[in-house]
View 1: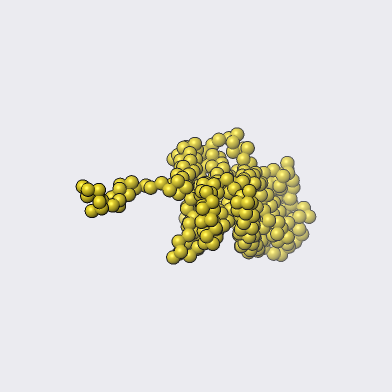
View 2 (view 1 turned 90 degrees about the vertical axis):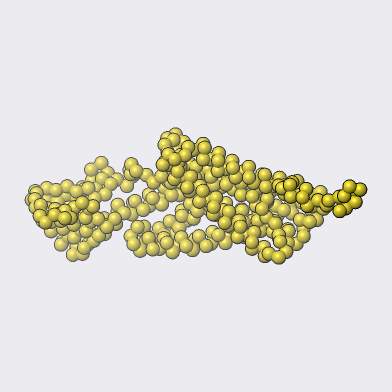
Length: 373
């Protein structure tokens, strides 16, 4: 049908242009942030482009969601401004008839958003966390040079060796200063070497002294040792027991329905469901006032998108804290938005009047003879 094909072609052009602009802006911001993290030692400088690519993947569901919403709003605004909607309405094509071509165009995008949010986004975040963890583990000892103080990646330790190289298994006159929340420790030893135990890297110090002090206390605890063993790096192939919540696979969230997991699952499901609701809202809310610029529709769409996203974030926190159940929140938010959007669309499609009392009051009055008063 000419109507369906023309709408889908214009939506495709608008969505492609909008998505390219959004991705370009995010890539620029991400590159700047990745370079800053690399300069502070959080990532290997050689992996900056890889980190940027993974980060863009984590933002892509949100960008596609916004791009699709803006594309629908701008396409409908153009149809209204050029009076094409009047022609379609005159041809017995109601406003509700546009929902079918919109969904026919949007369903591949909705499917892509769901796949990205449920599977690709947590995988990309997991890769970023793994790269960060591997570089931080690697940096503590491999960057130690004789005669230079070297701070660990997390900033809690400072290493110094007078001669030799710890990575070559032997070093002389080793100095290690450790800062923790409740104490500070200074360890000095005549020699030291590293060894691997079940994949974990230990620093073994021999014939040394350990000084421990605590904030608020005047005394210093001094102890001497013949051998002191310190864990400095865990096995890079063994992940930490405490993984980042947003990097957990979706199937793990479903298998372990804790409050935190259900909150994260709500956020991931919300991306795809929100896209469908926003399309209906875009169709119902978009209209053109000759006295107002078309940017009014765009500003309204951006405000509605931000409100919807903030509600998803609030819902994630509420579910994680146990203030609301998973089913109740999703039913109220997404079901309520869907019902409100369909009701608004039905009102415009069938030209319902919300205020029949005012309509009767505005009708002309007649006298007893049937003539207007």
